[in-house]
Image (tube, rainbow, N blue to C red):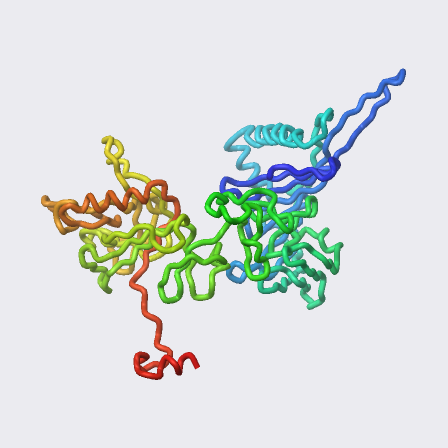
Length: 474
């Protein structure tokens, strides 16, 4: 949502970064000026005045047009406190001067472009017959005069319920400064201190999401939520034909949360099982001791020893897709070590971005290459004991189709750090079948060791003995 109109008199305007996260919001008021031109003639002009502005440089800070800011503190993904302050370690204008010096006219040009974009997009909201003649900006403060020594005595703590919703806010003296009660889908039914919303601190309420006062909706990254439904369709709605694309948490707001406005994902249990969790949409909403993997993930389970040696073709690659929540859509054996571990690095365990992308050397020759590029070819860490600390340009690609080896007949390495499919005579057919499932893949690669079995309920006792299972149930 780029712009919003409330009764045609008050407006909201929003900006986002390339990933879709909000970077600013601007509140505007409609101002109509009628001029008497004599003999009964009147001229009416309409302009929009900027009333308030909020900037979001990152998830840990926001700042309004006066230079007042709020810093946020987290325990894992849960926001636990916010501190209101003003003052900066250095003059903000120093950075602006650097930009102007290196790119003369850039900032003025950006202001002009932004002004024209705002007029065009806000014009779509005005009533028929009206036209935006001007947008009057705020009288911006001279942030060059905002220097160090700012006071940050206004510290507030959030007290959340099991859904992460703010129930109470207390100050540094343990005094309750705000209290909220919600209906099941997030409508606020009791607001202890309405004036608290006028502070520079955003209104984090239901599910710890920001409540926009100008439109009465919660910002959920992918969508805006106007309880009890989202105002736009779930981008993944075609995957869930049995559920309304506007519904919140599959109509189960008591037990579920929705951190981004999207649907559910794959996770790894504490015992290594990969399963689809209806409640998991991030690590914050994944059960304790479990690992969030995402909607589409290729799980690579290696078979390395302590010296990073791995028997040929003993690693397993399982492809888990959002389109099939029952289990892996495809599986294949392969390798997670290089041909020569004494000179090439071995990829460290972890979760990496991955997408379908052939190797440039193959594509340049007009060849088809069914492969995944790992971390966009950028730096990735290596396992402890590798001869180098990081590697670049890694792929998962086909293996040796002629020998059961990571070297070809001339001694050339099939892998200098990349992950490979099976290496054995005739393996190309197996890889091509698996590779067809990789087409269009855009998700994650999860490299892990062999899952460890769960510890017995009674250490030292054989759980297969008669009566033990009954005892455990008791």
